Structures are given as C-alpha cells and as structure tokens.
Image (cartoon, rainbow, N blue to C red; front, side):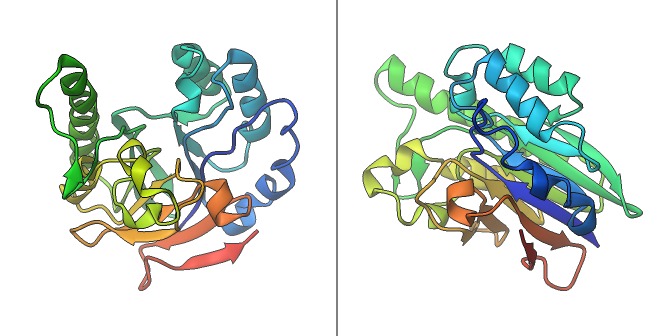
Length: 247
C-alpha cells in the first residue's frame, strides 16, 4: 500500500508560516509522500517561495509539487522553482518522478495545466492568433503530461495538475468561468496511461470528487475544498478512492 497526502492552493506568505507545520510534522504517521497541486504562493515572488520552502521543506516524507497560476503572477517562476528545489521539494512541469515507497514504485507526472473548457463547451484553436495561442498552450501542456505519464515505469501512477481535467470537480463554481479552470485535454492525457489517481486544485468553490471519461478517480484537493491540511489517499489497495485520515 502507498499512502499519498495531498493538498493544493496553500498560498503561503509570511503570515501563513507555521500554520500547516503541526499537521505536516505528523505526516510520517499517516502518509508516505506529500503532493501539492499548485498555487504554492500568493503572488509568485521569491520571498513567498522562501516562506513556502520554510513551511513545506525538510519534511520526513518526499514532497512533490506543481506550480499554479498564482506562482506565475510575478514572472519569477524559474526563481520560485529554484528556491523550492534547493529546499528538497520536487517541482514538476511536463515531466515525472518515481518514488520508492514501502517496496513499491510511485510514479508522479505533473504539469500546471491550463484552461480551455470541456467537451461540448470548449474553445478551439480557430480564428484569431490570440485564441490559437490560448488553446495551443493547453494542447502543448496536455501532450507533455500524457507523455510523462506514459513514460513512467512504476507500480502506481498519479497525475498532478493545478487546473482541472474534468468538470465534475468544478461544481459550485460559476459555469461562466469553467473554461478558465481546466480543460478536457488534461483528462485525455490522464486517460492515455494507466493512471490510478488524478489530483488538482485551482477551483476553491468546486467539489472534491470526479472521474475522467476513462474512469480515473479525480480529486480536487484545493485547501478551501478539503478544509484541512491535507487528505490522504491509498493506492495499491482494494479501494483506490479511500481517504484514510482527516487531519
């Protein structure tokens, strides 16, 4: 069994430092790894990244993250990534990693993702150059995510994004902003590999549970949705969807 703790949209700044740490220090008792689904900071500054590294660095379990839209706000995403990496936090963007946990190999492929909408109500790469660029960005990210998922040699496979791959986990958000919260192309990428679980954030007013068209369980782990420091999911067990603990 592999136990995965997950949260998203922690939006760390100096006033958040210390808030998560008591629960994080208990992670080894309940989980084997921590995955964070983007929006690690409020405005994507190096100073906020250092706060994030203080709060989530140096844990007794591996920490794997993707960036979110907030982490790009100050155009310092490369510097933010460097600060987190220096703190021992693995940052994924269109690539993957394999963790050896409890005699099993957990594969994690991650990408921020992007918008575009969902089947029956999605944008297309047609018309103005601005629209082609918008959808082209999503297409490129989804292609990289799918390739990363298919390229991992592991016993259990997890997709980690910030933007949503399905509309079901957006329920509660205004319909008008669905195209800016995710894309069906991410769901297609997830379904292109034997993915066991997909995690995302971004939709603070959304719903927790959904599934891709191919049947992969999807969980919105935005902090505002799960309302705790993290949820814990188990893989390589009879019930892949099971939350083990509330912290």
